Length: 78
Image (cartoon, rainbow, N blue to C red):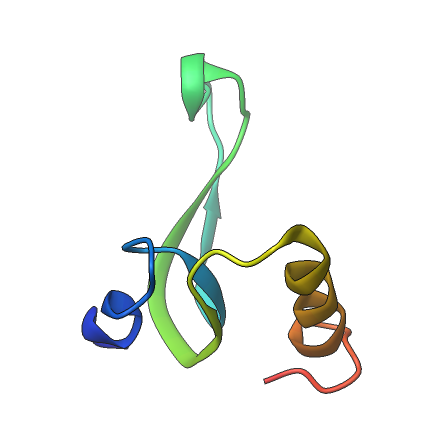
């Protein structure tokens, strides 16, 4: 997805996007993430099936409705 797909949103970078990530989980003798709190990290190798569900910040009720409809397991996932 080109960055311009969300650039016309009222708040830059805000929105809901569905996508498919392919990669590997990494573990070992150390921890990852914020303050080393996680025993695994997910390294993404490929991003596909990108679909913009909603652009910009919406009222919470409107965002929850979009998630129920379009998110994985929703009534009509993109």
